[in-house]
Image (cartoon, rainbow, N blue to C red):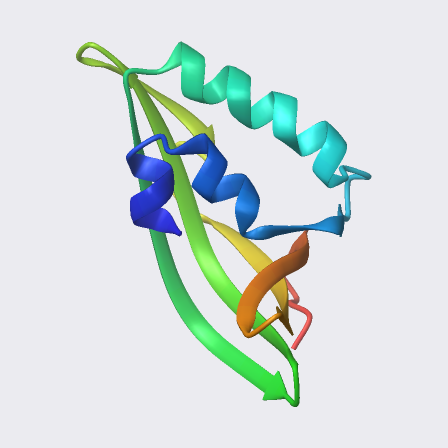
Amino acid sequence: MRVVAERKDFDRVIEQVTDDYTDNTGNKKQTLKPRLERMFGIYDRLEIRAAISKIEKAGNSARALAKVKVDGFRGSQKERLFGSPFAARDLQIDFEKRGGDWKIVGSSLVSRRGLF
């Protein structure tokens, strides 16, 4: 997913998200799609750093906890798109196995206390 996003392959990124995707800020796939399209159009290059600290799997469901930073580049100008200026943000990502492939069904920012 990270490589596909960094290549700015919008169709491949959005394929990984289920139609019933939701996050803790109220985004759905329908609202996420135009935001990603704009972001892919604005920046020459994206750099995504994700460090997965925990994965829990139960049957056809899984949950990952990761520290994530996303930077967008316009020429040599760098902008932080996700994460604070000095640190990555903690993100919980929920997956389900559908049609033999793991798809993203939801995500949530994690408070400092964590969800696990």
